[in-house]
Amino acid sequence: MSTSSRRGLRRIALPAGIAAVAVVLAGCAGGGAGTASSTPAADVAQDVVFALKEDIVCVDPQQTSLTTSLNVGRQLVDSLLDQNPETGEIVPWLAKSWTPSDDLTSYTFTLADGITFSDGTPLTSEVVAANFDAVASLGAGASLAKGYLAGYTGTDVISDTEFTVNFSAPNVAFQQGATTMTLGIVSAATVAETPEARCQSIVGTGPFVLDSYVPNDSVKISAREDYDWASSLRGHQGAAHLDTVTFPIITEPSVRTGGLTSGEYDLIQDLPYVDEARFTTDDYRLYAAANPGVPNSLIVNTTKGLMGDEAVRQAITKGLDRDKINVIAGSASGKAPTSVLTSSTPGYTDQGDVLAFDPDGAKALLEDDGWKLGSDGIYEKDGQKLTVTVTAFYAQDVLEAAQIQLKDIGVDLQLKMVASGDFFGAVASGDYEMLGAGLTRTDPDVLRVLLSSASPSRWGIVNDPALESLLIEQSRTADAAARQKLVDQIQTMVAEKAYVIPTLETVQLHASRAGVEGLTFDSASRINLYDAMVTSD
Image (cartoon, rainbow, N blue to C red; front, side, top):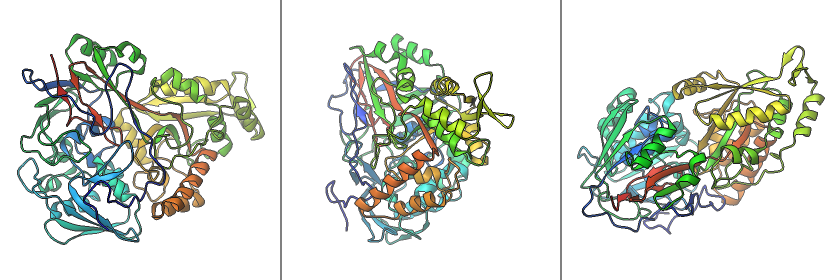
């Protein structure tokens, strides 16, 4: 079965309706696919300065899961398919049609005609095959890409424009994975480079090209005049409206907001939630989208410290007042998590009863498990304090709120805030008790990516054969209703056993001055600047 239109696709891997992830805030502009309706100002330069909150570390989308990196990479790299953030529908992009096999062990694609990389070389089946073949050699940084290609056995090149991607077992989630930046396609010359070189410079088919990347200082991109193959989800066709985008790396939030108010910056990444109301005026545009996937959570390693004790994990779950955390550290447009999947993720089911705030129940669990309250208000057993450590590189305010709440139930939560590189180093080594993080993906398969012992990007380390069986089975089940039943069981098991302990549903919140608009979000809540424009000084 093939498709060359938005309506032709058999919907697999989307077992339930996807909630709209783009939120338009009062007095502001924002949105998802195809929302740009204004026209660029003819007498104003289409050059903007977009302040980032951190270094991108690696510009290659196949080698990173860092949001800031992906926000830049999306401008340079296109994907085989695209996904509507409001409906979950998967549509053509670089591939004009595609056919999944009945058993979902292979997917045959036909590329659109006339697509070239920014170095002038054509997009061909051979280049796509080289991209997928090379993922295995990219190292630990490409763990997400490897996860999307689980069971990959190779790509058969049928012609310059037709190819078949093969798997050793059904891979129901690959189709959605083909919409992501993580499986975005880079040029043959880029594929031939070392992973380290690819982190510094890549060539894609996207509407912008990379002019420069100076680590910890800035990134600059410029538009391609010959770009003319945007997906149907975009608001126009042809070249991007903007001519250049300069991304200074500004780690201090107050400097970013100050630069926006002074006019030094046209857009800023990650407007602090505490400043949301201050920028909700006619002078600014706010853009908000809730991340799909696994919410910001405490992700456990049951082989370290006290995390192998289910009673301790369950007590931590019961000791968190997620509504209060959302008020303290969340966006005005966000909500408290009620499952181990965010409410905007296909397949989400409400686990609010399991995640309900119950401090008395938490204490009872610990005392039944043999813990005694010490004179300092922290439980102890056999001479050991109930101290647990979470390793994280962002959302410190969320973790501090959790730390205060858990102290009230006698749990000493220690925060280990590290640089992003050290965080992923800890992931690679398994040297952590809990991770403070979330994982974004518009498919419930994100739980397999996060927790399966077979996943190269596993963050949660658990030894649960029953859960492992369910995670693998859902990834091989094409029938939507049958897959949903499996996904429901997985969410219940993960929440009840507290392998993932949600804290906050993250909202991507960016801001621009009123004379700049058209920033949109893809289905993973990463920004797309293709429709962005300057409408006035």
